Length: 318
Image (cartoon, rainbow, N blue to C red; front, side):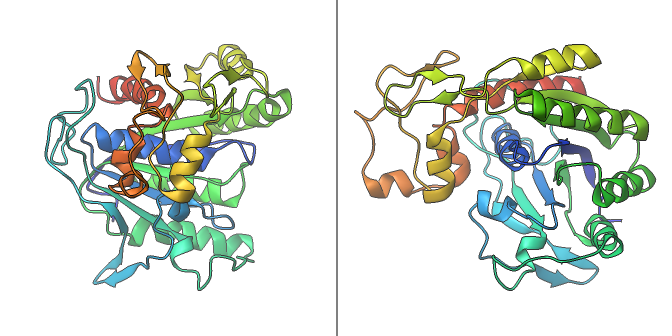
């Protein structure tokens, strides 16, 4: 079984499409890597696989090996403060790590001939693909495997949870992070995902409210264009932990789409950390140089995810 050397398995779920599950999965993975953890990301959104694009590796291909598929590497481990060498020992160190853990991905997107190809599969074929991903990907030793899921509670979810509960040990199953946006129409669908978790015995680690505000790229003011607080009210109603709210940051979009390091108006401070400003912005070449994980530390969302990941690590590895 390819999961036997995976220490913790974490699902990213939502009953609603378009709430930013893949964005949250990407940033959780990058932040865990910056904590020194070795991380794998499995994309089981078969009809809309976006994880390869988020990590800038959509032109890569999966390699076949004896016994299964080799996941596509995003970056290798780099030793430094907080690095765990694959056993998670440095997971609770604070501050910015000078090194990072390894990160790799598996997605149906790597198996498609063209990015625009449609996946027109019936339920049984989707179910078989999910099971193959869980059994045939050679992850090796991982601290965390994050699983990015499609919206809803469909065949993929049922197959995924059934297979995990059968193949993984209770100690490996860390639980699920639920993603919502603040609007009532989103929350009404996400509530169904919470009920799905409870019916299937999946522990809920917490709720993240995404798109709760928009960070202006010119003045850094955050405006609650989609309102704010709905996710927290829902979490309180269902008695599950609320992990925090995340705004929309155009600089994160620029980082993903253009590979450019985020820069902000002068005086921008997030959680006590001064962000890189336009005044001291690097040259175009310097802005695009370096690994995604290193450039991500300049993003305003990183301090927020750093706090959320600390919450998760204390719950999973107290």
